[in-house]
Length: 360
Image 1 (cartoon, helix red, strand yellow):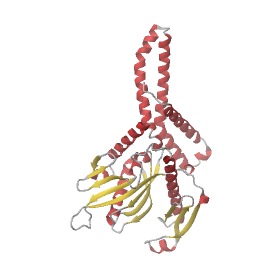
Image 2 (cartoon, helix red, strand yellow):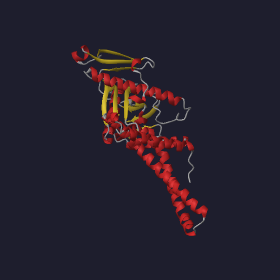
Image 3 (cartoon, rainbow, N blue to C red):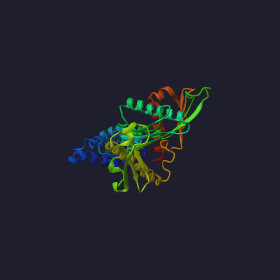
C-alpha cells in the first residue's frame, strides 16, 4: 500500500473537521438570516466535499484491510482466511487509488473553496496599444467566465484614449474561480501590428494582471478605525454630475499604507461598498503574502505566484499562438481570446498540482 505521512493525515482530518463545522454553522439562525453567508458557506462545503468523501472512503477501506489481516493472522477459520487472502489485493489497490486521488485534491482544496476573486488589469509598456491589449484580456476573461457560468462585475475602469482600458478592476465569482484563474497573475505580452501602424511593423506591448482572492470580512484583519475615509468629487471626464457632486470614495489604511479610490458610479454608497471590498482584498493579499513568506520557499516556484514582474505569457498574432512560458507550450490564439481557455487552464492546474504533490 501507498505510504501516507502523518502530516497529510492530520491535514485531511482538519479538512473533515472544517466541513463538519461549516455544516453546523448553517444551523445558526444568524447565518441562516444572511443569504450571502449561506451562499458562501454552502460553496465552501461543496468545495471540500470531494476530498472529504474520498478520505472517508479511504479510511473505511483501511479498516476493512485491517479486519482482513486480523482474520489471516488469527488463522481460526481456513475458509475465512482464504476469502480474506483473495479480497486483500483488491482492497489494497482500491485504498491506493483513493489516497492518491485524495492527495491530489488535498493540495488544491483551499483554492477550490475560494469562490470570488478580484482581477486588476493594467496597461504596461506600449501606450494606446497596451490599453487595447488590456481590453482584449478583460474580454477574454469575461467570455471564459460566461462559459463557466460565473458572474462578472466591473468594479472600476479607466478607458484608453483609442479604446480598451488603462486600468480595469473586476470581480469574478463562482465555484472554483480561484482554482482556475489564480494562475493569470503576472505580465502578459502581446506581439502584433497595431491598427495605427502604417508600416506594418510588429510592436510589443504588455499588460499586468493581478488576481486577488476576495476574502470574507472575518478572514482579513481589518480594523475600521485604522482606515481614513474621504469623500471627494470624481476626477476625469464624465460631465457635471460626475465632477461636481462628491461621490468618489478614497480610503487609506494607515498600518499598511494601502490606498483605494473608487468613483465608478454616481452613488456614494455604491462607491463606498466597492472601495471597502477592494481594500479588504488588497489587505488580505498583503497579509497572505507575509504569511507565505514565512514558510521558507515551499511554493517559491509555484506557477501561480502572481508576480507582476514575471512574464508568464506571450500572445503572438502573426503566428496565431499563445505561448505560456511556465508550461513551455503553445495554444491557439483565436480560441484563447474567445474565452475557450480550458485546455490552457487545465495544463496549468496539472503542472501546479504535480509541483505541490512533490513538495508534500
